[in-house]
Length: 99
Image (tube, rainbow, N blue to C red; front, side, top):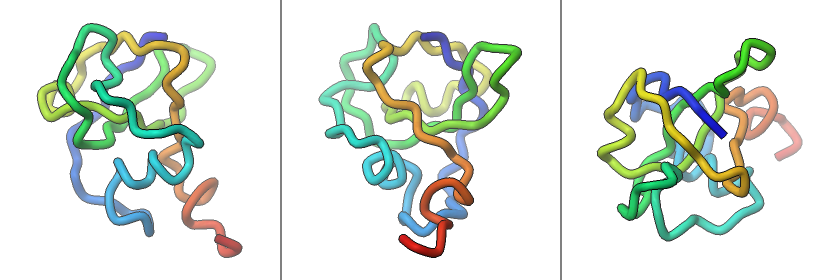
C-alpha cells in the first residue's frame, strides 16, 4: 500500500508516551524488525503520521519507521499490506475512557 508521510512530529497528544508506543498498543502486531518502508532494512524507532494514498480516506494513521524515513516529510512510502496502520485519532484509541 502507498502511504504519504505527513510530518515528523515527535510530540504526542496521546496517553501512550510516543507514537511508536501508540502503534504497538493498537496494532495487534509485534514491532517489526525493519522499517515499514518495503525497501528499508533499518529498525523502526519512531511512529510516523501518514495518510493512505486515497481520495476516499483522508484520516491520519501511524506506522513504525526508521529515523531516515520519519524525517522525509511529504515522501511517499511503499508499505506491505501486512503492516497495520493504526488510527492517529486518539478519540478512537487511547483517548477512550474505558482504556
